[in-house]
Image 1 (cartoon, rainbow, N blue to C red):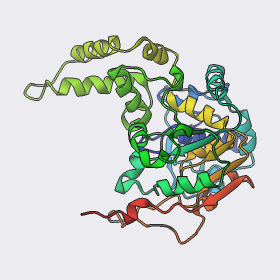
Image 2: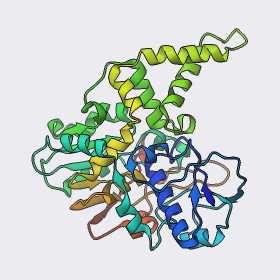
Image 3: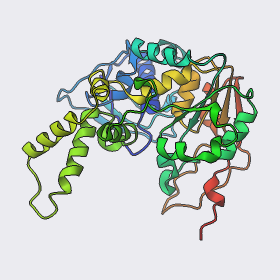
Image 4: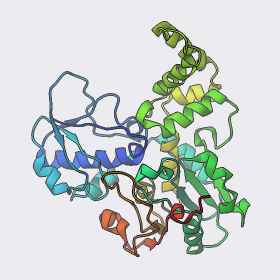
Length: 369
């Protein structure tokens, strides 16, 4: 038995990462004949997005030998390094998960039927073709993220390469700021639809607790591990700390009571969403896979959105990672001198439908006073 240890961070541990890790481990199982397992807290988004997965959930006290590998090693080196009872610590990338088994594993991924039905009903509201546009902002904007940011110029240029005036569905992990960014949609606002909460038919729910819970679970995997109960617990901790600054803290009973109080404030739709373990990322990815054209961000989420569907054309950014220099944060690069970094990282997933486009990082030429 081998084990995959999912590590959580403020970014890079969401559904795209979990799909990549699943493909990596299924390939290793096929090549090494070792069964593999995860803990019950891991792969939460993956397990609640797809049906019929080959997963062994094991919370026993079995001991494993830690195997930590750099994410720049290839699949062959990972395979050769894995031994029985290995606990694998490696970040899955499009480069290190590619094996002869990848295509068949991808084909086996089937969205939950209730997710498919909801997304299909929403998709069918649009006559004809639609474009999926993924905007990855949020944590990418932080100087230490090590990632390129795709600016409005990239998305405008990408739209110029696709049919005019067909609807554009915008998917983003940074909903509030992207929706407020009028510059992106100023030319034709009626063309764009922001995907916010497909579980509720993309309608706004006036529920402060539910909105904050969604925000935490969607974007704060480091603390919530994409689990609604963990999100409610964090909200309860935050609320109690406001009243415990000058005391000795709060008790477990107070924490449980606060979680219960927060739960009672949830709109019935949010309560049902939690009960059915339905997550925004699951619906977003499924709907993205139903679109006729895809404009990617430098994100495995949109790479999987394109790969799991059958789009006619995919526009993708050439520049993926700024890098993490030793000894601090380097100046943000504008570009990589036309080097197609994405193709070098994800070449096995890029077909003749994929069209590269430069994505200079807008942060590098912002004027700061």
